[in-house]
Length: 188
Image (tube, rainbow, N blue to C red; front, side, top):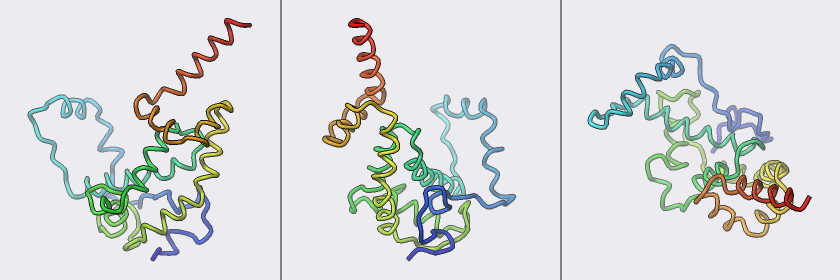
């Protein structure tokens, strides 16, 4: 069951329903912890040294993954990213218990005392999925408005085909648009 104070009954993409706001707390100073890019690069370049993850870091990573849901409502986000997020949300139910699955992220962020959001307890993942599914057509329509008619038709008629192309090459649509614009110039 959803906590009404966290997920309002009338869903609005801009509401706090899927925008997980961090709590002002001295223990959650993520931006300052990530500022030293040189130190991060040194850690990532050194394959021999293991990266130590605290429990708070792992909870924060779950929270960060859930932030991707808010990008579904943003018409400027690329289709490939949206397909990837949707695949993660609507994955097979057998994978719901896997670490970092959508359901696992909801459980960890909702129940952990180290969570960067206020405690909301267990959240009904199917209810969240239903809310996302109810808004998905409007969100994707807004995103597709940026593209030519042939892209909109391809997504509407065969989304799996478009998704397969984008998985192989996230720039596929941009390359097709460039190729078509060059062809148009040749016949101008």
